[in-house]
Amino acid sequence: MWGASRFFTFLSEGHPEGCVDRLARLCITADGGVSLSPRVISTSETTNVDFHAEVATDAAGKVYVVWAESGTNASAPEAKNPYMIRMRTSTDGGQNFSAPTTIHADQNPGTQWYPRGAKIAVTPDGQQVHVTWTECIQTGSFGNCLNFSLRCSRSIGGSAFSAPVTIAQNDFMASFYDIAADAAGGVSVVYPTADASNSTIMYVRVENGGPVLTVDASLSPFGFFAFGPRLAIDGFGAAWITWFQGSSLVPSDVFTIRTNDGGLNFSAFNNISNSPSGPSGAASIAPDKNGAPLIVWGEGDVAIALQTGPEPVSRQGEG
Image 1: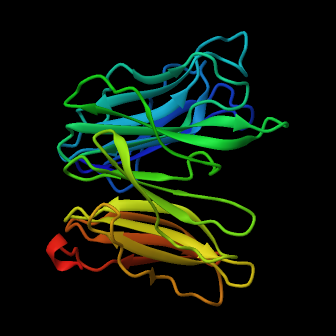
Image 2: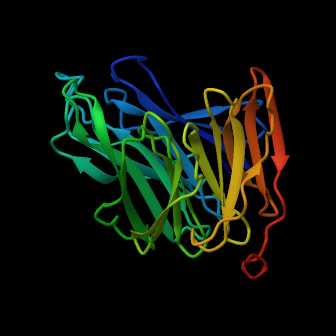
């Protein structure tokens, strides 16, 4: 994530198994990655931090980091309470951070499934901060999660975060979703569904803190599986979605579409990798300095392809 002429990477590190004594660390570089300056962000090294951590910046360069963290009950390292969604901010390029803000706390987490997969989207002016995470709401006989709830909370103008609302429910894997906010505070969310014969990419539009529209964005046909959705907002407020999709007979390709009206209409699908001889996937997307989307993905075993999308199209220019 770029901000204030610096590049920020937020990650979880520590014990590889058991979710024990992991911490959240922010790495900062101002020279294109030649040198890195790490900062420990989580409360202490005695906590458990989810594998997934997220960083965002606003137009002024303020840095926001969110993560899921357990409590500090050292006598029960596998079941520390409560599990929390936490955030810290920095106004000096990551040199110093505010005290942690607890956005959500689960006082009675299960032994395996707890709030995790935190993500954040911030409006360019920094006035709206939207944080999402997943929670398991149904488990199977073996303790596996059968149904996830995607929760969302927001802060406006620096106020306290709102009570979380559910914006989606599905058996998608925790953290396999993406979120972005436009300048007006509208939030776009994408996530994959999953079943034995098909998976597709769902788009959710969130306004005023709650979902107003849910639509199948990829329309993946029977026998095809769509995964890894990512999205970004361009310079004109359009939401661009990318994902990879394939079947047992067809190698996966990377697709992209856009919506200029919050999911009411979508552009035609664009197969941007178009590599029938080998699979493509793991796409990521972000706007360039002019607001046009840049998309990067993996192709085959080694190649990484980069493509600049078309220039932004105004709302008036799209039917």
